[in-house]
Length: 156
Length: 156
DNA sequence: GATCCAATACTCGGATAGCTGGTGTCCGAGTAACAGAGG
DNA sequence: CCTCTGTTACTCGGACACCAGCTATCCGAGTATTGGATC
Image 1 (cartoon, rainbow over the protein chains, first blue to last red):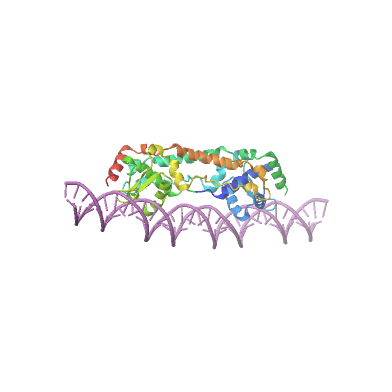
Image 2 (cartoon, chains in turn yellow, orange, cyan, red):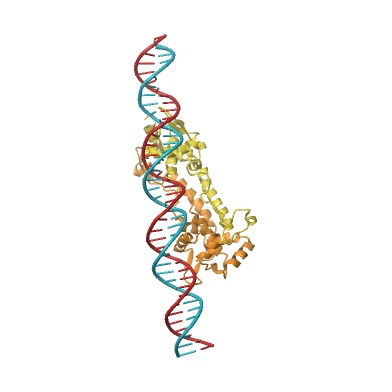
């Protein structure tokens, strides 16, 4: 099991936009070039971020993508959720109600222990990502790298 | 992104074996029938559990699978790890070192903030599963269900 | 010089093929139990 | 009645097709800029 590589691309993208005054806008091809990403495929993921309300897109000259909100109010989980969806990666198929040892529906009013455990683990994972904001991630980028990125991308 | 369905099958399997005296052995077809699983495909996952040292397999008449250790000493993580592997589902591709905005290798001695965050989240998920033993899960199965399962499978 | 308009170039959005990894299936290898013959 | 042996049936293990979802790519829709013509 692995996350789509788009998750990494998009996290780096929002962190990059978080280093730009007003969070952008930056045209897609610039972001792609900056990170060495395949421009057209990269587009697929940016669309998802726009749809999820993480980014705003503007067309035409001087257009591009920018953060929909200040980085302090965008969590890493929102970015991951936009791409991977909000559901747990464990899907209980209620096999306890199948086969010769099937439990009766009355015995299954509550999720089984395995389902509950997986749910708790998933929420723990999600919680860690929800705790981290884009601003937090930007803050961990060395200052001289931030300056370099800003110079390279603003008015480029 | 989703976990293989084999994860659910195997977790239910070890919980079932945990309800059997000495943890088995139970032949594969009985387990499959009990849970309504496709016997032959199910085999694929049981092999992985044997390889990982979670189950022991014995061939011939009265053979089958049994727990390699008491349920108190088998964690849910071991079962998941046997199927999905031990690596995080986030694979950092170090895109900060790619493209026109590439950072120099000297600037990348430590994992990037995104990588670190994902790693912490993954460890949090793994930790939850490591905390839960097979015995814990067995303990959450209603007693009358345990009795029913034992009657249905022992000497069947 | 200011205003209006049309052409232009630039941007994003949706729909369409290809490939890796999970899904599903097959047959062969090995072993413990069992039954029968012999002592 | 006990022992030995050959058969038998049962079990698991590894190798081979198939399909969904991620990967990769294409073209079309819409807009701000820009340059020129007009007033």
